[in-house]
Amino acid sequence: MTHAGTIETFETPIPQLGEAGRKVRVYLPPGYSSSGPRCPVLYMQDGQNIFRTGTSYAGEWEADRALDERCAAGGGGALVVGVDNGGAARFDEYSPWTEEGGARGGRGMAYAEFLARTLKPLIDGRFRTLPGREFTGVAGSSMGGLISLYAALAYNDVFSMAGVFSPAFWFARGAAAGFVKSSRPSGGLRVYMDAGTVEEPHREEYVSDARTMGRLLAAKGGVELRLVVDEGAAHNEAAWRRRFPAAFDWLFSAAPHD
Figure 1: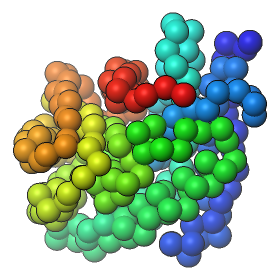
Figure 2 (figure 1 turned 180 degrees about the vertical axis):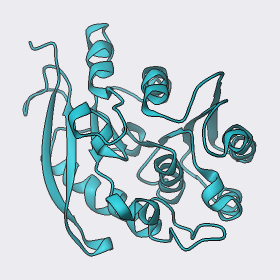
Figure 3 (figure 1 turned 90 degrees about the horizontal axis):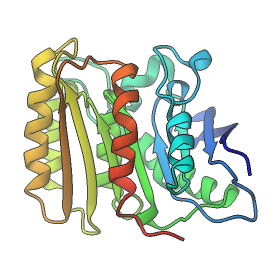
């Protein structure tokens, strides 16, 4: 059995955004085969930065290495699906709401629908996944964290876990808070949320916003929250790379096995 996972890439249309093709990168765990055990799945934003430095624009998470090490230590295998961002359209598609005082944002509802209703069925049909919501999570950082939390709450029938790294709630703070308050995650939800204490810009807001949103989530029935404040951590891939393994382990620790 191989001790390193592999990365498979392909392009798929995003009909909800009228886009003909977007690159998707799929991490397959060590020993994965078309006839082997089925795996849980984590869908991640900013796919360019998840696995390879050569494809990133701001550093990488090394998620593949972390999951290889998890498997080597006896942890269960999982698929990670990294969806490339839309470049100049990133702010638009990673927020369902328009920026406070600006014109960016507003296409996140369509993008989240793509994740839940188009991409997930495609991945389930193409790979050996555990398709139930109890095996399925969504994660991202900054704006990617914002849209990941939205997707998990809006499509609670699809996602039971959300990894929300350094979420950019400053982008649409009021709308995001209102949505969290009104959401009804009837199926239960595990949310990992974090922030560093020296994130730039909006240094103080990352931690205070995470704590505020954390309180709103914790007050809701059916939500299990883990909030991490990382002392001295900045707003970059190096910080998210360091926190990813523990976040992944916590999110998927309650997932049943095949």
